[in-house]
Length: 93
Image (cartoon, rainbow, N blue to C red):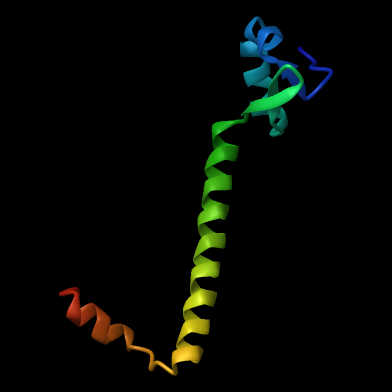
């Protein structure tokens, strides 16, 4: 069993232990940061965690877009277009 003592590695130190760092991120589900000259420049995370983060970011953007659309509709006093009309106009109905 391996144990990483810290969550941040210099790029040069991580180079020799990359497999161990990858295994650690997949097991612990926490990122390991890579730094150069004391500045974080990258992070190693498990691909499942990345997919989850991307999905959450997309959901958050959808909420922001919906909020902006609602605000615009209130500001312009626009009337919502029924979903069935949109589908028909796009040839999906």
